[in-house]
Image 1 (cartoon, chains in turn yellow, purple):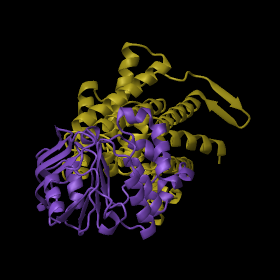
Image 2 (cartoon, chains in turn yellow, green):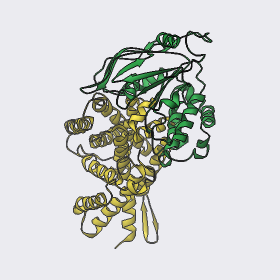
Image 3 (cartoon, rainbow over the protein chains, first blue to last red):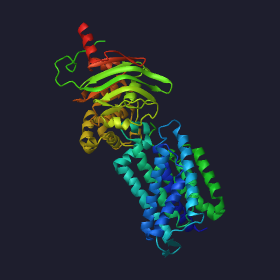
Image 4 (cartoon, rainbow over the protein chains, first blue to last red):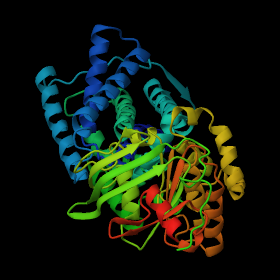
Length: 293
Length: 255
């Protein structure tokens, strides 16, 4: 068995899925919204990057930036359409679930109608080089994917740690009721949250397009994996999501090499169910040393 | 009830021009089908420290939440610094709270409405919500540390690891970070050991109010006695006794 192949695939998958899972996790815990339109934002950002590459420029960083901006725009649209009108109504959790799911279905059908069923491919963002060391090969897309996602996640988390808006978002994640008492406006903060998590979805869309293609329904599988990783890591915990992404990335790489890629979802859910049976709060339950309020 | 008359009382030689910080008229509020507060009137002048006493479940916290717009529904007029912040609404608790906070309200809620993962310092920062308070938050944090010296050593510790008394200090300190004109303190001594509860009350009494006003809801009347300007009783959603300043004065004269 090729150890290096497993390790590199684990890291690659963990980075991309971790990006998605962190976005879902932050949205859930700060806004109380399980954003099922994430798959649509993913595809929307992919098509945004594709349009940019077709009409403006094919330079790698520019396409990446276009994808992230398109994702952020998608997030803000979802926020304005699906969150703001219903966020203070009774039963918001269920309503939000249904609203975002509806947006997802309508949005992907719209993309299908507008762009057609043929998948699109993006230009190679990180060039086409590779670096050979004894026993291992670094290809451009793998190195680029890992470096970019780690870098952008680090910037986002750093911003959340050090800025005032980040403090507001973290406060809302921990106790939304107390946050409104302190004077944090839910509606304004929600636009920041949805913009940022949308941008993360856009990042993942562009990075994943280096391996797969962009298609109207291409966001579905990444969203399922993102939601399940966020659940497994303990919704609301960024560190839990990172660890869960590594565990499930490892699981996917191991499954792919041992019994075949088509069994990935089965083994993945087995792993998630076992973790949640042992630790109902997910991996975050192990990490969190502070008592709940 | 034995209440000493302090200089702040209206009618005594006024040291500052009297101005209404809070004027509540005909306020009703509740949650769903339950009506907790019934047509309540309350006037608070600037510089006043008021105690509200009453049993569990008689609407002290709901009154505070209604002023902050956090109840399930409410109707009636609430004027904060002459600005109307009350509205008739049937849903959307908390939707307008940030605007009321910006208009000068600091609510220090009952129990531990804290962010358990933030450190003490971040917690105090989160209380400095208005732009002016955010700019000189460093000086304000020093002031809070003077009021609550035990917090000095704990600035980098997540609040979830603190003891009940320390959490209460953080919660109160967070409320004192803004220059609000009305402080609502809900049950500051609840759930604390008597000694610690007493020191928390002492700290609240030591806060310089200036032109602001403070309302303290408390079950333990003995802690407030003789140290606040007025004590108002609350019973099944209505204020009893000295709801208005003029009425209070009459009661003292007769006594």
